[in-house]
Image (cartoon, rainbow, N blue to C red; front, side):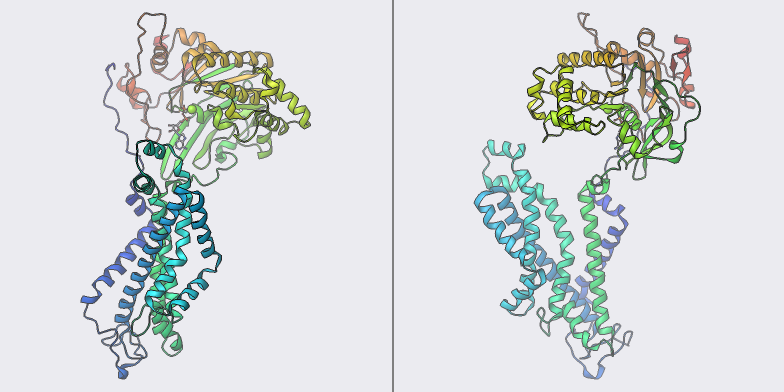
Length: 640
Ligand code: ADP
Ligand code: MG
């Protein structure tokens, strides 16, 4: 690594994911639930040592004292028993029963789920049909029936509640185990000679643990409520033993004369269950990061754009498509990632514009912003304009955008396997792409699909149209995506690293093909790559991006012969020259800055070998060097 004048880099803020505990505390409701629950737990744990009267000691002379009476803060009940003492002891019982029932249900249910999911077949069928039978009965009725059979009593209520909750655990766990069972790491464990029991304990169980914990945290509140319900009906705790439910049940008859006897246990049940549920939701969110990050939200149909970015077009548009100072950001929590920072460029009809830069420099986000394809949330187009046919694409109607996408403006994605639908034949997918934009009968569209496949040089296209994507090689699949992009005679094809997933010979074929097709159809091409070799072969002009900014733009030949920006020079130097006996690979020292923590001055300063103090003081503007060339470096003129 060359170490020329690389001055102290700005130490980036640590922005990794916080640990589960930190996440939990970031959720204020969950933190509130946790604190409440801890307070309640502390109180009931120290209850035996508190100077409280015996909860069962009756004193008929002190019946139904109101709250705040002397010696009885919460008053007394119909037998003169101290309410505070009864509530604290009752909460102990309720919590103990609720938590024990949860543990019992979780252990038995998870075991059933593990066995059914892992072994499958006959065992799965038998166990899960049993679970289905349990679930077929209305929940609370089943608990009532069980208690009716076993007889009233706290332990029997516990069994009943545990039994009716077993299906939740069994089903959740089985679902996860079924998907884990055939994963490679389980196969590897099996091949290494581990037995079923060891695989279940050491490979599968740790992976389903989060599911079990989440299910427990979200059901324990319910179980406490259900136990209270049974006791309220007189089927749970039997006098003199009392839990919150039975205290509430006894107070029910006095609700007019002495409302405190019923309201206090009711309030405690409410607070207890609410804190447990708030905490449970927090635990679930902390353990399942997708919920918090919004990954389960469906992204909007187009990228969110601020009013500023939707403004009408002023003045004449340049070329076929013009981008003016486009700014796209990702708003993740409180952090702002400036992924695309005001690049301006245009594409002439029939031209190939290359966009080049290291991974993470904002190429894909720029390209996706053009058609509103950046996922929102978290993506937002803050400012700038994307102008096509004198319309600002961020401001057009959804209908118009849908017409343009895949029609006049086509997109080829990097990974052809993930963009093709696995369950449709490639012919059908081409037909669908065409019929979305053109009035064509299925038969005509199919014929055209076969023609398109021939056009992208797929041998035996007639037969190949009937196969599924997984039956084709990577190169073939990418040809299919190119055919799909061509299906509606596009004016502009945006190709985002379309050959990165392919090997060198296939890559060369695809590139040649893309160039030929572009000439045949006179379409423009916006070609994104990280490889200057490819740019030299394909493009007329090239735009170099770094940390979301355009740092240099100009005709390929001039730019390659005489690069004006130090970053461009270093990128060119990275292309191996195989004609030399020992090709020297010169990497660029350091890493690009993080887009949520960008430096003030030149973004490339930390990695530049010509950096001066002036570079870091103020933002460096893009400067026109000739009619066609621009660069963002204060020394650019001196270099040319
Ligand atoms: P590339 O030039 O390799 O195509 P991208 O355009 O994909 O780079 O990414 C540009 C920047 O945007 C990167 O720094 C990346 O970390 C950031 N980025 C991309 N997608 C997201 C996202 N969903 N949330 C936050 N940041 C993102
Ligand atoms: Mg990319």
